[in-house]
Image 1 (spheres, rainbow, N blue to C red):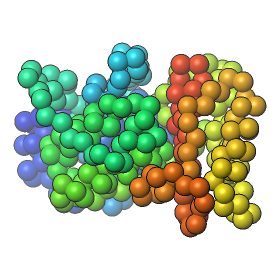
Image 2 (cartoon, one colour):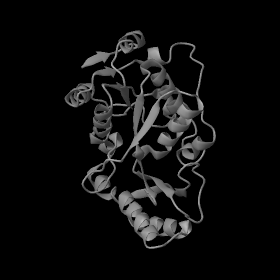
Image 3 (cartoon, rainbow, N blue to C red):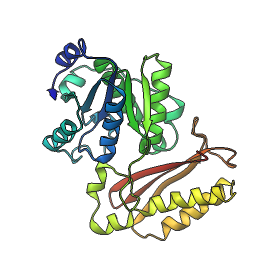
Image 4 (cartoon, rainbow, N blue to C red):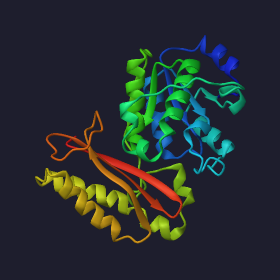
Length: 278
């Protein structure tokens, strides 16, 4: 496995890679959710590249950039074990050199949900992903369903800008108790970790209600809210039932819907989602 730390070397390596090329962009501190993306990429491509880059432009001023967990040695060992061919590990000064002043934005899909709470977040995501796509030039790029809005935004961006690649969205990987795997789970203290599976329990409740014929989104949201509020350590940021393509809030669920949420446990903000009707 080759580790590349600057853009010119990555561009040069890319010239002679066997096609198709699968790409898994990450911020590191990898877990089995990331590894599921690498395994999918390995199964579908002759070459697999991963990136590890904690992108500063997607963090707000009061967010956790400085303390975001990092363990490069462990990450590289995990990627090597899964047969990753190359890892791109750039520095801030190369990704955002002095005088950097260009941004990529997707308008409507970034306004609700996470965008409503973190207004600069997606501009940072779409900009860095565009830069990584331009550098790596993948055939297929792999993202997790846990970040459902991010996946929709990136798919829209790739289509609108004719990026000539396929965005592949892979299922959320969960701990045995249902908690969605996330690098931020390490922030949870033992009591918070014990409480956090209430997110998935509420999503399962939504699935059960819908399967039993409930189509009124407010009824489902109300019961989810009641369940989460029974857990005193969890503070709801938002719960949403929205259109799976536009993210417009729904009153009546006709066929499918994205049920998504953000809930805080102390200073740790966790997101999760399921799709109803699929």
